Length: 584
Picture (cartoon, helix red, strand yellow):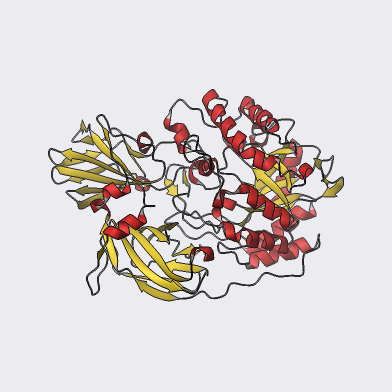
């Protein structure tokens, strides 16, 4: 058993001064069979603590449906941290930002427009109470006072950048204590304006979030908190990427210099990210500060440990800085070996519009165009259908986030939220089908909690269209789709979309692979039924990471959901990842 406390100048671990040298690893972004490897490599860099967020929307995907299995087994993750001899910091939100879908808040919560967001509104608080009652016992029983690794728990997350509802913050404090949390509680905010004070309470330890000008930022933090240990709870040593931009990188030497300044000042630190991982499936978030920008599948973050778990020059630069102040292990992690490179061809394909009953059940809505929330569908793809008496100009209130239009099964155009498009010319009447992609919910700012789909009013030549069929599409039903897929004719050519195409390949056993889809346009890829995430020819990301545990000995199946069409039937496994050109 042990204790962890906040002293006048230092953190105190078992009564002795302790510097928190933490690295962020999100268990929900890493295959669980790889958790131990990533945690160990954090220790080898010289870190003594692992920090993680907790995503509410993953643990409770539907009301009352709490899950903590597999990739969501927080208890197992914390036990592995303890087994490595390290401490843990848990940040349960309820809002986490993290470039994660909806900032971790469940979309189902906002099906009721009266629900408050990050506030003391009663129905919102009741939902938070329910989630914390389900998840916090896992944390409480692993606190340091009970022999576990958890030394601190965060209240909310950068709340000062969003609001200043002190009753809300107090409710969270009372709630976590009621659920058995007795380790020190803290808040984190950017050291600008009134954010630190707005986002905290007098009884909570205040920390800062920043990635540069460390000495100056720590001075601001000290003005807001005259005593107690200084800590940068998010030392931003990299950044995330959006579709259509460059791959963001930061100079390893410059980042190491900032880390040196932090440690020289006696501060504690949490490296955000130490290891970013992957936005598998449809889990990526988005930003919208006037222009909607969805985050890519990779969450490599230019972190010290790459998306696939190998050390970078930044890793070794940070390790060298840490060694100036603290002992580091002699052991070094290995560099990335070359992966197996090969080419496979898809051999069967099925048009999505031909197998709609296999993908989901349709809901008839007599009135205006519904949202995806009206169909209890919170991620991925939804098909809207209605019959038009004539052609004309169709307008929508807003597209969230990308809509492909089909008349009698023939594609007639696309409306995209990031381009601000809201009108499309339709040449004739007939069956209109609209394939709408939720490209990721906004994870920061005032647009958190917004609904998805075709946002009413949807009008044809100025007259609102009433009477819709809305069908949630579940692409987890791949085996049924494979059974319906037809063999592609021999020869060259590509694959028409929207469709799901299949390929098989052999492997000796588990091994990291990198999937490259040159010549394909946009969609998602699946390995043995697991959704690797989105690909898009606009980049910057050029490869999708396939964690080794997803590959099995013998035959493996690749499925590709292509929304538009490809110029080839080939896909490639390449020997290393390619996240696109950086800004240099």
